[in-house]
Length: 200
Image 1: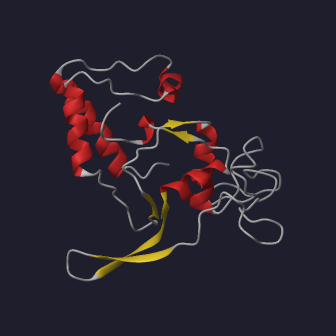
Image 2: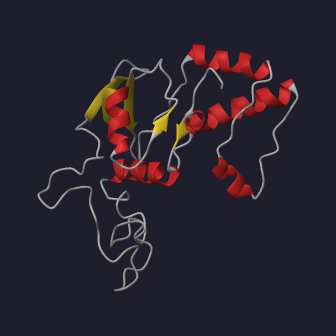
């Protein structure tokens, strides 16, 4: 396994559940227990250019991440908040949402959404979850040492693991480069995708 970890390095079970918990955390809606129901679990359009006539909504009703007594469902994130970040001009920009927990707390919380994680890197003692907004992009940089260790591993013939959903997406195993320049280009592109993408 590469020394620099990313999501595809972890052995993460029930990838669909993982994706549903992420969407739930981002929206406050219950994608987790509604996984077999029409998705997304809301009865309104956010993109209001779509027609809103009766019977033509994403789902028949909106299901939030709250229990009937208004308490959060067990897999919800703990309460977080806005965090000020220094900007290039000496002022601050508010990061809309951030929350931190220990690695064990994180694993326990995702477990309540039927997601199991094995081979979680021992180096990680804390997990910080952040969310941007329509006008604040969050760019997540990898740790320098892990990035450089993964370069070393790849140049010494370590396999660059690709998650199986890529195979389903493309209908075959990805065609991986074997030369140094191609391997480093793939590595750079993947890191760029992780850090710059606001995945939608």
